[in-house]
Length: 130
Image 1 (cartoon, rainbow, N blue to C red):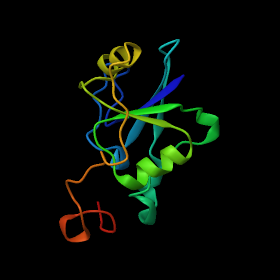
Image 2 (cartoon, rainbow, N blue to C red; image 1 turned 45 degrees about the horizontal axis):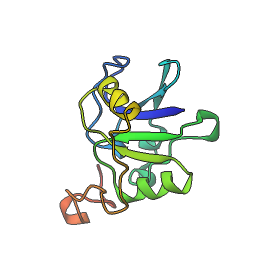
Image 3 (tube, rainbow, N blue to C red; image 1 turned 90 degrees about the vertical axis):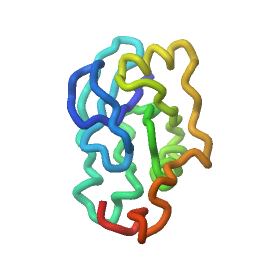
């Protein structure tokens, strides 16, 4: 099973999870069995019209799940339509959250759990410049 985590800096399993999935600079993809990992750049950040609908994972990435603190509904719908599970991070580092996931202590995001900090364009929601 491969799990993707949004990160600002690559510090391996000690990397701090980025606060928001859609605008994360990078994703650290971790193989749950081997604990091996690879860094993947968020390619959608370079495409202005798709910032709120990040669909960065291709089939070759073989990502089965994402662990994040915050995610907009566009990203969440995109991942769910690709059968990628989305879990809500409970701790700061990738390692801490991996341990919780292995104990089945991370909850799945519900479709209404997406970030609502910035609800509309005037408040900086989708449709604006991040």
